[in-house]
Amino acid sequence: MYSYYRSVMGRFDTGSMMGESMNSMMAEYPYRWMLGGSRAPGWMDGATLPKFMMGTDTDSGTAMGSLFADAPGPRVSSSEATKLGNQTPRGATVSTKNHRITFLGSTVHLVVLASPASRDETFRAAGMVNPTIAVPKGARVSIEVINADPDMAQGLVVTNATSASSRVPMMTTARAFPGAALWFLGEPTSAGMHSGTITFTASASGTYQYLCAVPDYARNGMFGKFLVIG
Image (tube, rainbow, N blue to C red; front, top):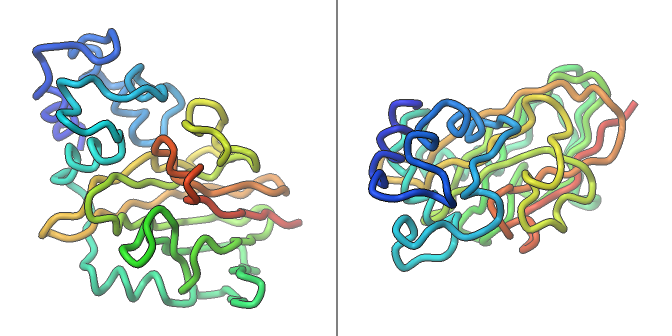
């Protein structure tokens, strides 16, 4: 994946990104940030990407979705994604009335579709849109994220309870738990939909949010409540 990242960044070696040289953009720290690290390159600080990179588009999610569409990594077919987005997770109780998925065990595994075609800029899990997810304190949580959006990058981050109001949540608030961030996945191709997994320990009780960290997506409705109980 690092080699692919370098090849993508290398396409823009005739200019700079928000004042940063291509050599710095192709280095390890911007790449690690893409995988959930705490430092972000300047061109992801909330401003639009430079015109030479964006072309005629001004939406960073659309630009990054296209750039990383062919990135290596796990893929899921459209039919399998639909099935996974509707199934009840093992060890969970699903309440459509309360719009909630509740886990009781110490191990949690959940599949979340990011922006399925049926409703743009939302998440889908256990057949519900943006459900509340509740897990016990101390649980080891694994969330598989599938980008079902046909032409945009999508991701998922678990962060504090007020982050959805920010235009760029990853720059203004910290992840709630180490490992609880997948900043983005490229858009689907004929090879399938990109899939990635975040794994973390829900070590502190409280009310948090899961959201898409692509600029403005959470403010447009791409977020849900994440509860740690105990």
